[in-house]
Image (cartoon, rainbow, N blue to C red; front, side):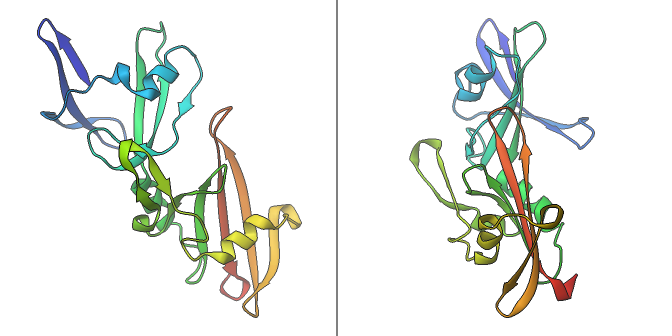
Length: 193
């Protein structure tokens, strides 16, 4: 948060638990931070719709992630939260289907947002706060690329052969906002299900 007084602004880290209760607070002594100058703030301020940014390197933590923001009632402020790509990847890692199964969360254009190994998600971080995301090919996940390329058959499930074994796959599109969609892509050997 940023508190304003006559001498300018004071940035403070506020840490919340899963129930949004304050668990810690500490001042931020780094470069001056004005959220009103951030792209997510400028995008959310004129609309009453939820916005989700493309992944970028966060200002204070320098970790890659996305910001979810919404103009507050009355329009005088914007409420936002950051989600790191590492956090998304940890959630996926806990959802491991089978020992050989694969699962990834992709952007609408097929870039990897989350995978069981978070270190592999960001292919390279470019200057200026932009983030280059990995692809299924760069992660060495041709089985998921196959699922992504095929059309669903029985209730969204895919049956296919991979390396001489029968596999099941699925992909689901999840609409976050009018403009932002992600895809969950998964595959597992039928023998492990």
